[in-house]
Amino acid sequence: MTPSTNLTCDLAIVGTGIAGMAAAVFARKQGLSVVQAGSTGAISYTSGVFDVLGAIPASGKDDGIRTIHQPFAGIPALLEAFPGHPYGKISPEDIRCAFHDLIEFLRYAGVSYQAGSDRNYRVISPAGTLKHTWCVPKTVLPGCIALEEKTPTLILGFKGLKGFSARQVVANLKEFWPGLRAERIEFPGFESGELYTEQLARTLETPDARQRLAEAIAPLLSDARAVGMPAVMGMHRPIKVAQDLAMRLGVPVFEVPTMPPGVPGIRLKEAFEDKLPEIGVDLFCQQQISGTIPASDSPFTLRITGQPVEREVRANHVLLASGRFLGGGLAGSLDGIAETVFDLDVVQPETRSNWYQVDYFDPRGHAIHTTGLQTDDKFRPLDENNAPVHPRLFAAGSILAHQDWIRMKCGAGVAIATAYAAVEAIAKP
Image (tube, rainbow, N blue to C red; front, side, top):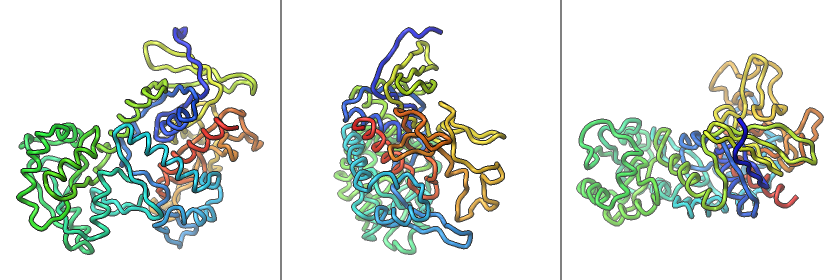
């Protein structure tokens, strides 16, 4: 098919996960023209919190996993154990700057976040376990504070809502949070049938629904000085929904992230998709983008497909933020692991038998989770001779090698920070 619409830009971003979206925000702030394409579905499956560093996997089989309470103070130990980790190419100050700029954008999009100072927050999970993370939605923050202060708190569940049990949360936390108790009610207006968090979130965007929910909760408050519930406090401007419920109840109200796809992740997806075009990004969601590596003095020519009108994109720079296996940036086969857009060299175990440890819960993690692209200090992918593949080709996010975002709990931090560093290198070479 002959493209009917051609686009030119300073930067083409391949991928629309957290890294790609953050890169688009940073690039527009630098005044770069941006074309971006990919699938945003994976964002819906995030918990909505942004980790910087939560754990360091074991170096030896008999070692333990180190929980990290102070993420920036823990980075030197991480780099000592994993010297190739992408954090080795970006300063802690720039990581904080990256988060600041992204939080500012998300606030503009109606989703407010709070980054920690030096310590990770402890966030309650739907299973009643605790997650250590550095940056949380402001609708989650009062729960972190209530947990730290052991505030008498009511955890609320809704009949018909699967994947969340207030009783389970309380049972797992009550040992060190004595003032915690659970109640389960019918969500007003949904007295029968199965409930879905997105459905409830959109319902609570009306003042009438919030008033009816507050009236249902009020008789259960007793001595509770805070109320937690599944993450359903509106899809847009959730902090206003939370503040309104808190005003009606007279106590802080907070969200507990639910099983994916959860409302906090869907909020992020919708916030990016709604607001990036407003700041000038040519965004093509749920589309494929492909191309080849040009000569070093020629622009990239990419093709966006998957829609009735295909587009050709001529870009001075390309940022590869296509993710790892879930995002489709890497693909495994009997012959090994391949990068799917430009067929770049992938750092990986020599054989498939080395992809995994025998024990799934091995504290060292699995080698396949550290596969990816090796880059220089500007986050340009390297070839087999350790030279940049192209002077204007960059990579960011989970596709980068030497980081196990699952076990290190550093996924959002790596995505946001490396996107920031790569865009800085593009804008200020």
